[in-house]
Length: 192
Ligand code: IMP
Image (cartoon, rainbow, N blue to C red; front, side):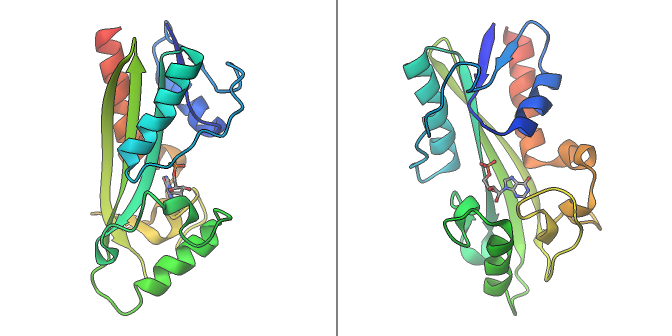
C-alpha cells in the first residue's frame, strides 16, 4: 500500500519510514508532486492534522496521514497550543517563541505544561485520529543544545533533563510524537 506523509520535514519522514512495515510504501509530498502550501486554519491540532490529510486524500487521491503538535501551558490556559510555531512572531523563530513563553511565566510557580501531537490517518476514505501526550514543566531558563523548538525549556515529568539534553532516540521513546506515531503504526500493522 502507498501511504503519503503530508509533511515537508525530511527528519520526520526518515524516522517514520524506518518504523513502518516493508509492505507500506511511504511517499513524501514531493514524491506525489504536491508543492502546494496546505492551509492550517483550524483552531485545534486534530483539526489541522485532518485538514492536511484530507487535502492530500481528496485532491491527490492517496491514502495519507498528517500530524500537528502544540505546547500547552496550564498558566496560559493552553497557549501557545495550535499557534506554537509562530507564538513569538511570523518568522517561526524558536528563540523568539521561547523568550515569549519565559517572559509570560516569569514569577509564577504554576509551570505545568504538555506537548500534544494529533495525527489524522485517512485510508480508503476513512479517517482515524491518534494522540500522543508528554506531561512536564517549563524551566525558568534554557538548558541543553539538542532537539529543536521549545526543547531547551521543556522538562518531562519525573526526569532531570530537559528535552534538549536528551539524544534523539531517548526523546523519541517518551515524546508526544513518538507515542502518537507508535499508536498509528500499531494500528497499521494490525489492520493492513
Ligand atoms: P509541528 O506541528 O510538528 O510543525 O509543530 C509545531 C510547532 O510546535 C513547532 O514549530 C515547534 O515550535 C513546536 N514543537 C513541535 N514538536 C516539538 C518538539 O518535539 N519539541 C519542541 N518543540 C516542538
